[in-house]
Image 1 (cartoon, helix red, strand yellow):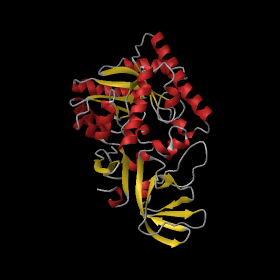
Image 2 (cartoon, rainbow, N blue to C red):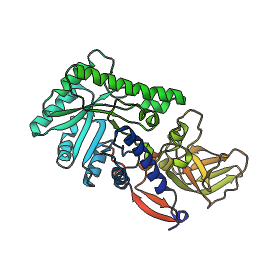
Image 3 (cartoon, rainbow, N blue to C red):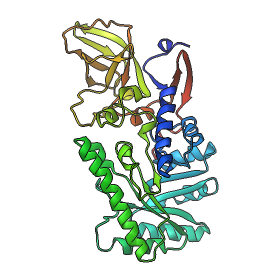
Image 4 (cartoon, one colour):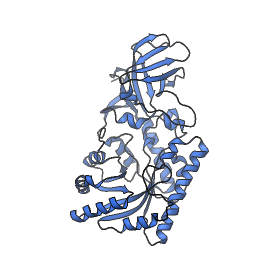
Length: 370
């Protein structure tokens, strides 16, 4: 099947690019002796996760229990959720413990006590890491608070819980305004986590794992010591935001959306069949302005004269900034989206593309939001 024979819109994954991205990140982690545990929320695909494991990843991360259940059913035996799971999900966690090695993060002593009670009643043990806020201010304990080490010790001492170490996510790196600011954020995360681990150890607490993870700072973080695990996700596909943050080039972007021109109301305006249900309404972040909802490629090259200025559910309104465009109804383009992770969650199936070869890629864990 030829790519341009696919029904549109279609999500395309360039297999050679994805494999190259996976190989490059694995090599960077291996060079530093850091264990790589990719986050699967970008691709939500057991097939892509197997590529990562085959190349040296020690396990995977999932965003939600529903995703973990899909990957456990596919045979993955080491799954981590860097996410605060509430004990309301106790039955699902206990069921997963019978199928896979499961660990998750926690950042509240009351919730930790509740999980301890659940595990004791079930006669089980579960591995956990304490989440630390390194500047994103979403989840995690404040590393500078006076009682943080005492709280970690309290959690680590609870029955039914196997304390493994500390975990962080430098989500603020997505909002860096320059290469230097991004580098400083990466360095600050490593320093914060290694210092906190040292304070814990000085109080007699074993900290076996220090887990960091995000794609934008990886190129800086992996040049430092002081942590044991790295959890990038977006690197498998990349997207326009990662290009704008200097983490990738356009040639690294493995996920594109194939879209067709369905209308041309004016010489300077075309309508594509890829709206917010395919491209998402996410804007791009980065060091320089990145207007619109993706980069349009024609013949494999970015067409800087075309701006995706507006999305409705099924349509993308594109303006030609030069005044005219030769594209006509029926023509196809490929789009690098602003955020590839969300695109994966919008379709049941993508298409693996390798030269002239096209084959379906089921996205088995899409929509698993609980």
